[in-house]
Length: 229
Image (cartoon, rainbow, N blue to C red; front, side, top):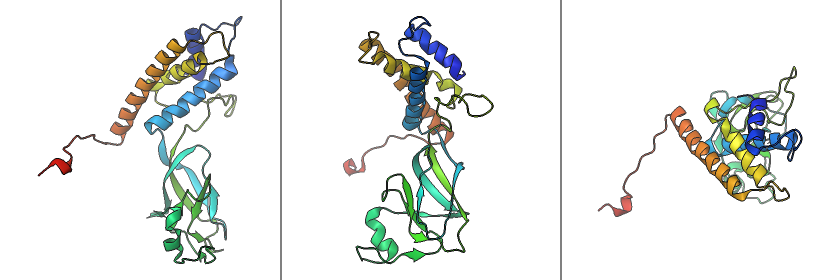
C-alpha cells in the first residue's frame, strides 16, 4: 500500500470529501507518520547498524544521536564491541574520583553512554589525531528511515510506508483515532476513536510477535523459584 492509497482509505474511513476537508491532507499525513513511529516504538521495528556511523573527531567526546534513533543498542569499533556505562559509573571509567573530572583519558573510545547529555552519545575518551577519521558502527533501534510527511525523498518520490505490508493499515487506524479525537472538530467521535485505537493495538501486538519470530525469540512461562522448595 502506498502513502497515497493509505491516505485515500483514511479519508474514506473518516468520510472526508474534497468539499468537506475537515482535517486536510497535511494533518492526516502527519497523523499517519505518527502512527508509523508509534508502531516502531511499540514493536521493535527497526533494528540495524547499517544505517548510522560515527566519525571520530580529535579531542571530541560527544556526538549527536542519529536523527531517527529510538535507542542506541550497541556501538562497535570494527570487531570490538564497546562497553556501555552510566553517569554514576563515570568515576570508575575515568579512574578518578575528582568531581570536576579534570582527568580525561585519550585514545580510541572503550565505552559510551547516552545519559550524560540528552541527544548525545558521550565516550569515555577523547580521540587523538591518530584516531581522527576512524568510524564506529552504531547498532540502533530506530524509526522508519523516512517520515511519512516527507513528500519528496528524491526524484519526486514520496516517503514510503516502511513497516511490513501486513501492518500498513496500522497507520490508518492510528490516524483515524487521532482525527476522531480532535477536540475542536465537530467530527469528534470518542467511541469510534477508541475503536480505531483498539484496532491499532491489535496491530502492535501482532507486530511485536512478528519481531520475536524474526529474532528467533521464545516466550516461556515457568514457576517463580521463590515458591520452589
